[in-house]
Image (tube, rainbow, N blue to C red; front, side):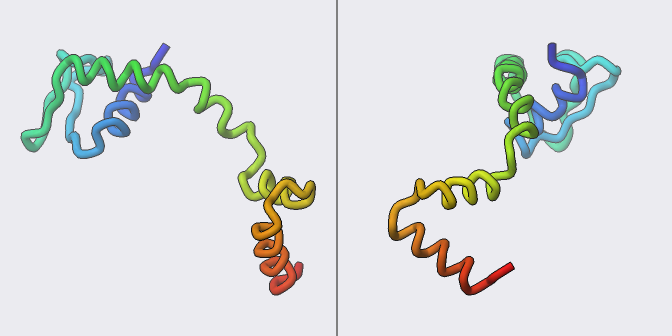
Amino acid sequence: MITEHQKYIALSTKHPSLEFRSETDTLSYATITWLNGTYITETEYNLALAEYDAQEYARARQPLYPAIGDQLDDLYHKGAFSAEMTATLKKVKDDNPK
């Protein structure tokens, strides 16, 4: 279930130029006051919330993954890169030792 705060995030992410506020603690299309002449349709509002809600699994996973640098370093040490990429990375590491 999407929270009220997440509704604001969903709308702001999908439509970054929107300026709006809600007249109540419950954000619904009917409670929105559109500011500065910006607005979306109720269908667009519902779509933004549905798309945000559908990505809950990705938001839950993201902080659990190791940092991308750690992932790439592991691949480098396991020899998973092409010879050209390995040479490039080795040069960076050699030129900048710990």
